[in-house]
Each structure stands twice: as structure tokens, then as C-alpha cells.
Length: 279
Ligand SMILES: [Zn+2]
Image (cartoon, rainbow, N blue to C red; front, side):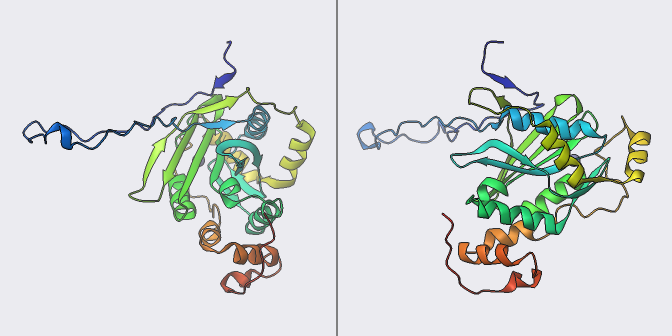
């Protein structure tokens, strides 16, 4: 393979193509001289979700650590919101068919990202999770979570990585008429990338991923079956209003909330103004 970019297996790929309205032969064409000058067609590159090799390796490590789902957020480059440079696995309970993030852990993650002067578009729009089976197709629960948690964002992306390497990445637009597009996934070896951080990944895994004994037993029984089917396991998924609330806030308010949230979740309704010094 002499290309610098390796394509991850993607079941479907789609490209946005500008479409012209269908010609209507019955319609009289106006005289040529009255036509407005033709505008050049702007070829926009189709969106692609790109992972840095190190991030991809971390995701594989987490996927393969135990036969359960594992979830987290993508942190992307400021200049390319579809280039994933970090996968952050917050504290979570996992099972063979579910991921349940800890509310406080999500709050802490957002706070840390804001402290690092990142915008929400860089850390709160792409939801990553793995499937312990071979299918990356989102389950009904995945769809419900995506719509509920990310439905108020202008755009969001759901990414699923299955055993065997199959992927699913769907960009959802909520502006205008809205829409969904399944996009290709690539691992980008062209840009510089770091080494394996296996020890750090293992420490992060142990600190954050809680798979109860019941879920592993469940995994053994169900392995190879339909992992996408909703189970009757209790799960909360990503906390309901986090991203919606964060999206709706003014930067100053967001900063205040993130600063204070750790100790005072009641501050969600507070409208106080403070200066926003992160830039
Ligand atoms: Zn899933």
C-alpha cells in the first residue's frame, strides 16, 4: 500500500454532491442574453472522519480490552472538526450492549476541555463507542441516545467501531431542513503522530471502565448474537441535558457553569454574567 492514508472498513460511504433541479423541457427558456452569469461550481470535498493513528490504536485497545461496549468523546483539531486527535473515555458503566456515562465525569471532562481553551465543537460533538460484535450498526438505544443528547446541536456525529474493524460514522445536521449522511472513515498516516501509550491507556481504562460481573457473564452468553438489539438491562446512557444546555449558553455563562458545576449542579439555571477569559 503506497497511499499514506489507510481506509478503515466502512460499510457505506456517501458523498455530498451538488444537485441541479431537473430540467423542464416544457418550460420556455428565456433569451440567452438575459441569463445571469454562470457561477462556478464549487467542488466541496466530501466529509471524511479521520483518526490520528495513535487515537485509532487507543480506540482498538479499549475495544479489545473486554467484550463489552466502551464509549467516549472525540477531541478534534481546531482547524478540522472531523479530524480526531484524542479519544477520551470518561467514567462509565459498560455492558455487552450499553454504555452509561457518569454525570460528574462528563462535567469534569467538559470543564477540562474548556480550561484547555477548546470550543464545544471540538470536544462535544462526536460520540464514539465500540461494539463487541461484528456489526457497527447503531442499535435502537444508540439512535435514541443520539437524538436525545445531540439533537439540539447544530451538527453531531455518531461513530461506532465493531470487532473486526467495521465502522459506522453518521453526520447529523440539525440546521435548516436537517439531515443525515453516512461518511467514510480513515486513519490518517500523513500527519505526524505519536507513539503507543499502552501503559497510560491501561491506567485510563482501569480508572474509568466499570464492567460489572453480570455484564461479562451476559457477554459470554450473547457473544455473536445480535448486539444491536436493545436489552432489558438498566441503562442511562449519556446524561440527558448536558449538551443541549451547553450548546444553548452564552460563552460566559458556559464558563461559569463549568467552573462551578462540580460542586453545584443547581447552577444550571443561573444567568449571572462573568467575563470569559479563555480564548
Ligand atoms: Zn451501540
